[in-house]
Length: 149
Image (tube, helix red, strand yellow):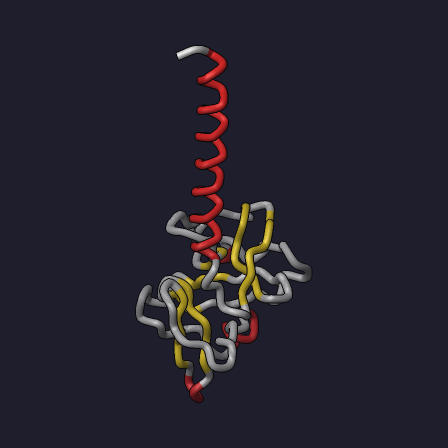
């Protein structure tokens, strides 16, 4: 094959690869609940509330149980992320029913929280607090519980 014929084939292959990659990325995020968006941070892309505040998972919550163990002072410091009105579970997103029938949004079975010390969109100061809090990130690759921001 001549170099003149190879170059267009490579260009077409690159465009197809980018298109497929973009489509896969878009599909992964197409089912984000209305209360959640992606937010760029120094830890990479993380999930955040619609106002841009980073959401976190709590190690003491049992994965896939859709039950919160954060109440009282814990919930004051780490406010639960409310599930949007009318939200229906759609993997990996779900609902934890808290005491008092409040509905809390979950990601991969972990109830989600914000952190009162995060002051502006993109802050990730809750990452690694007491070794039991971590940012919620897209996909299966998670930051360890103890990694500091």
